[in-house]
Length: 432
Ligand SMILES: Cc1cc2nc3c(=O)[nH]c(=O)nc-3n(C[C@H](O)[C@H](O)[C@H](O)COP(=O)(O)OP(=O)(O)OC[C@H]3O[C@@H](n4cnc5c(N)ncnc54)[C@H](O)[C@@H]3O)c2cc1C
Image (cartoon, rainbow, N blue to C red; front, side, top):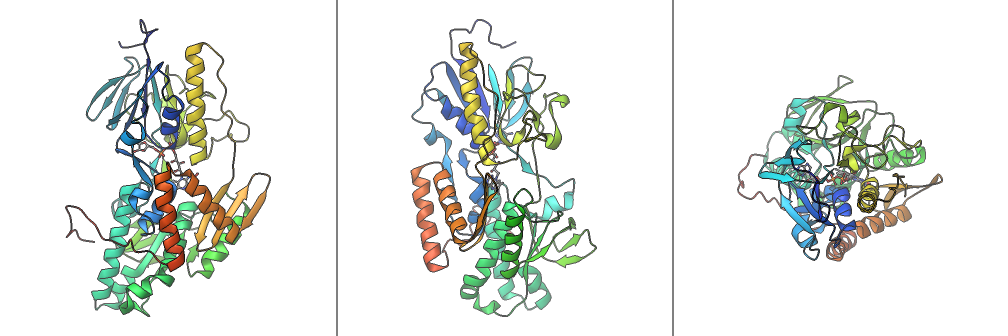
């Protein structure tokens, strides 16, 4: 059994699984603290910024604008090490974890593994849709949509052309709204110039959501403004409707309606991941790890969870857990860092309290909605500008901020961007 016995005067081995908002903020909170030897494990060798992946998917930003390699991020901190690997199994009794490429011992283990797309058991949809969860998905979506546009220019069959040009977006949360708005803008400003041969052809963007409103967690005013703006931009919105099946040619809706399309973009839900070795009783709704106010996973020693994968229900304002948002992960990561320090110093730890800084969604050029605490709501250019500013300063470093600012400025001035490349390394002929 590997544990902390006899290790009082050596650095604590802190293993963090996942280098998203939560994991990186936790590691950086403890940077250069010689009492911790930190290993951050991630299945990718880079951190990325999920709120902007749809802009990579639609060719507005480059992948490198929103991603940064872990080894470069941590190179100046002697107590933080990066390990490329995927967590497979946890052995809580032995204080070890099993990765796809080896084993690691820990004194403290932190799950910061985020969430993945939830298909609610619908295997056909999982196999045929275009997911929107990570950088790979974004590049795949960019390639697929561009290849389908090219196919639309060469087919002689009007029905097939319409199918290639129709895009169904499932999920009316911020991602679904933002990707629909961006595609609607592209249809007006960019596609007519790039694809003149498609002028006058049919197709469209259809946004489907099971709820009564778009942007469910936002204010009624934001919901209405978003609906009106997207409607005006030509997006067909179907509320109280769910996608039930899709085998690559036809989306079947819960209303019985069928939409012929080759493109279903899936943003309809997320679920956290279950790992072997963790007791089933530690998991709550959405497969999130039930944790106390100090992020310690219930029923386990020395194991913590932060961010999307953590379910804390101690705050009266969030009886069903915190929203799965970047700010929650960032604040939990920072607090857990401070609490781990307090723990080894024998001091009291602080319970987590979420500070809501507001929510925003961008709908299109000069159009966004913003809800701030105390029921403050605004929309239009100011909300759009604030959205750009907040997302820009939230990027991981100056290099990415400058590159993104440059790409946004080019896109704004030209009402267009020139990043619409089909790049499939190793698979140039892959069937779209
Ligand atoms: C498309 C999209 C748009 C979004 N827009 C917004 C927004 O506008 N505002 C907002 O506040 N939130 C937004 N979110 C939600 C926000 O991104 C998440 O709440 C946040 O990223 C959660 O942070 P995290 O640290 O918990 O996990 P993540 O940031 O998801 O990081 C998890 C990390 O764990 C790694 N990982 C997962 N499993 C394993 C494994 N088995 N082994 C090793 N590594 C693993 C992953 O590679 C990843 O790096 C958006 C999410 C998506 C997908």
